[in-house]
Amino acid sequence: MIPQYLVDFEAGRLPIVDTDVIVIGSGIAGLFTAIKASEKDRVILITKKSMLESNTRYAQGGIAAVISEEDSPAYHRQDTLLAGAGLCSSEAVDILVNEGPEGVKELMMLGTAFDLENGELALTKEGAHSHRRILHAHGDATGYEIVRALSEQAEAHPNIEVWDNHYVIDLITEENECLGALVQRPDGQRVFLRGNATILCSGGAGQLYRYTTNPEVATGDGMAIAYRAGAILRDMEFIQFHPTSLCYPGAPRFLISEAVRGEGAVLRNIKGERFMSNYHELLELAPRDIVARAIVSEMEATGANIVYLDITHEDPEKVRTRFPTIYETCLSYGLDLTTDWIPVAPAAHYMMGGVRVSHHGETSVHRLFACGEVSSTGVHGANRLASNSLSEAIVFGRRIIQRIQELPPRTQTGESVAYQAGRLNPAPSSLVERRLDLQKTMVRRAGLRRTAEGLVKGIGELERHQAIFSQELHTREEWEYANMLTCALLLAKTALAREESRGGHYREDFPERSDEKWRKHLLWQRDKGMLEEISDDV
Image (tube, rainbow, N blue to C red; front, side, top):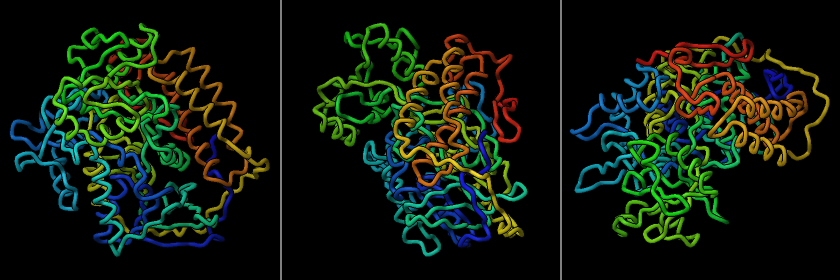
């Protein structure tokens, strides 16, 4: 049902823009790879909104790397593998923990100002980390500081051209080779943007769920367009729900960083009772999936829709200094982090799965690469270790550029590529209600806790909207919805197939982890359907 392209076109009749490297997305992965590529190549960086609007911007906790002499890559490796629940790639994790510190140094060279303590880099600890290895900036505005520094570099670089408010509809491929992208400009004109290499850095898909910490742009576009282009997707069932997003009337689902618990905050149910001792020996610093499900269990047991995050016992000045963004945001809604218990509930936060890539970011489509949350490098496995995502983007971004510089010039022009599906019916004039229905379905049927019955119902509800793939689509709203529906269907079908509980995937009807049957990855490829791949975690 899902076609290769969302619109009809003839590449040879479109305006053609040539460049060396195409980067799609402007989070840490997109900005960093664009800067690295621009050292030798001409780069066009595309963002569907503005350069500063990405998941990275909202990353509070920090970036994980071994800096302290008390820490070691071996400890970081062990923590990452444990969180990943048997589905990490051991080699990918080795790459991350060993190359991460150098990546952090490069960020600093590019202007990122991490917080210091007594003249040394300030390090904090987050859930499931055995040592303090989380670097942060401005207390709890790490992502924003990284994006600020990198965007200033990108905007000033003569080899980087930024296309704001442009939308990538699809990738143009020929004989399993990516030749570039079909892009719609702000004025409605479509162009064939052609390059020697294309890098997807488009982020995740938190908008599949009604409650999410992700910005509105996180609609799974990169995963969907890669899938239509023939790339393999992996581990789509593994969604990380952040345990503590602000849940207060009139306030958005604002992320309350895990670092708040790392600095001593405790969780209390609606009765004021601490409860994490009933669920895990690490208490509030247990892996995120365990904390999130514990919160849901407490909410159900007490008939509430929230629990409380309490850091009122810590020094007020320390709290305000360490978490200025969280403090000011809560204060704007009448909540004082230093004196009030903060009402929180879980929300969709991060996709562990995505476009399967090699250790140099290569997808199964030649000349197509993926980096950051859109990709599946094997680092995260079934559950991402906190703050590994920013490190991953830097480490594998560097490796992608190394491989791109080895590519021979492309020989195909792509000008003969054409697609005519004979679409007749226009899409509905507004998809706002359908988008909300999809988000509600995902929360109810494919959220924190899943069952076969619920997933089957959810898939049926989603499949009723598949007619959009055969309709004429003209707007960003329509393409985004088609991309969300693609990702939602693949996620729900994969969650139904995996009959166990592991990491970010929890089945109430199969509550136990089964390494004997399920220590493997589930893959999707458009022409082949669902496939399997044995995990190489040790």
